[in-house]
Amino acid sequence: MTTLPISQFLVASIALAVPLGFLLGALLGSRRAPFRAAMIAASVAVVHAGIVGAAVAVAARPPTLGVRLDLVTGVMLLLVAMIGLVIVRFSRTYLEGDPGAPRYARWLLATLAAVTALVIANNLLVMALACTAASVALHQLLTFYDRPAALVAAHKKFLISRVADVCMWAAIVLVNRAVGSLELDAVYAWVGAHEALPLSLHLAAGLFVAAACLNSAQLPFHGWLTQVMEAPTPVSALLHAGVINIGGFLMIRLAPLMAHAPGAQLLLVTVGMVTTVVAALVMTTRVSIKVSLAWSTCAQMGFMLVQCGLGAWHLALLHLVAHSFYKAHAFLSSGSTVDVWRVQSLSRRPPPATAVRLAATTAAALVLVGAGVRAVTAVPALSVEFNVPLVVLALVVALSLVPMLARGALGGGMAALRVGMQALGVTVLYFGWHTVAGRLLVLPSALPLIDAGWLIVTAGFLLLFFVQSVLQVHPEGRLARALHPILFAGLYLDERFTRLTFRMWPPRLRSPTAQPRLTTLESTGA
Image (tube, rainbow, N blue to C red; front, side, top):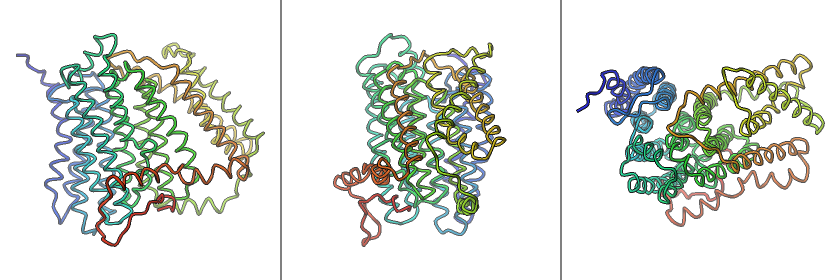
């Protein structure tokens, strides 16, 4: 019998202590001081996650005690623990004096326990159980306030999550039959030892993709994400900064399997790209800050799945981390948005966009990004290869920098120069981090990139940029008049889905006189 190294056993034990600590805090919380145990559990979790992160950063270790000890685990565990601590601290002030605070604290810690258990798990069965547990615990938080709108949105989220569970459980059965094990390292080894996957594993990969898309609120199953704003603000932050990322994390964790299933990868790219384009356009029609942030999350999750479908797993992980911190800050600071808007309304409004100014700004963005990419590729130590994926990513970065350069150009020569230097710096940092993350995140198998996927991404972002540009230059034009009502209604996708779910399984509202609304709830800015 092989004896485990003490350091390896210790790191695994510390990682296991994170979800167990959250669970213990949920069980031991008191009614008089509901957030005392929560603060202790969250604070200890950050320390433990930091130790695990430092340990796996030095060297990845074989799975121990059912814990996967690699860089993905270290990064995600520290991310969830840090955001959990911030949300617990914010919730303590937000719900001070609320009679439901003990119940809220208990389910908040239960959600964090489930998510951290998912992050460290080395077994597909444990991952599936953790996904279900996180969804059920989050449902209690989404229905914290007894309001019809909140209950309807949470009901749709609950149904979609159960369909995702069915997809994941079916995929697990197929994997177990083909591989004979549900341990991730065994699955990785089996996939690496075979040149081609059998039909059952291709089907399993497709089912995993379906589960990821459902959990990540991809179109047309997105409506609940834009309608759960009746929940407390820290719950929105927890959802958009943490739980919604489960789909992307699942794809990153299953990268070796997904890399050998080009059909599943292409499905990821297609669904993610359609969601990104539509959600980004719909977001421009929203006046409610929190609803606009929800549509932004929908678009960001789509782009994260696109990166997974292209095999850019390291970029997807960076995107996940950056998006989580941004959305946590955006939701927790949304209360000060009105003051910011008042200050902006007193300042001079910029002149309307023109085709000439937009074309000049786009050309400047392409030149600056090209210079930044050339600077990165000129560094011998980075060994950046100039290829099609690099060109497509450079194009995407350039198009995303156009609005920033346009605002800088309105401030005069010095402002334009300053913003231009910032854009150049952003480009160098982006592709520099791209290269460094690609070397740090070493996956067990080579990840082929799909030419058709890169074509879809290029066409999608060019279409998005073209439509947004036309709407800016001609806000009262024919295209704007035709698209605005459709975009404002979210392409009527959620209405159709809501009617279908109400026919199949209507929600049970706690108020006997309350009737669910079939129209898009978020269109009113709720």
